[in-house]
Amino acid sequence: MQLKLNWGLGPAKPKTELKSNIDALGDKLIEKETGAIRFAGRNVNGIKYSADKLGSEEICAMHETEIDALAMMETNINWTHDAKASLMAMANLRFNGISRCVTSGGTSNKEGYLPGGTALVTQGKLCGRVMQLRFDPVGSFTWMALRGRKETGVLLINIYRVCQKAGTRAGPDTAYSHRYGLN
Image (cartoon, rainbow, N blue to C red; front, top):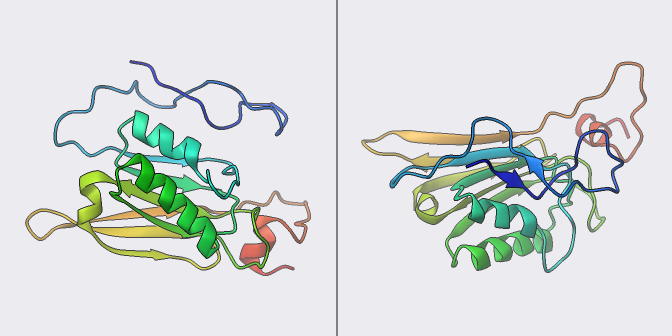
């Protein structure tokens, strides 16, 4: 089964033009075995900001592909209390109230767009294994510590490293400036 995801931008397209179907990277997605846990990570290059539908495309893709933990990088959202609550509500609605979310995105008084940021969402049985969740206040990473079997643990770390091309100048509203205090 080849998976076609309906999110993200296609290569060499203007930022305003979304590509309808993008081939998933990696191996073909196989049928999920009973008891298996599926992890996924994606640079979403910005989540559409809408108070009632924040993260809806990503959460729907997570549900359709039976992903148990989804790491999203470069969310480009100011993760205010309301934004976090909106993502959590979307996940709870899709996963029957069984989801956990942790987000990071820097500090700003603005609503909506803020460059950079990460989000980590789990659903289903994996939620009962979450022992701790933490975030970096400047939006570089989020993580969850999961309880494993026989006194083992699993640490899910979602990292977004801002890049800046040599010789270019970072403006005041770039993720690079927010992370490295250049503004």
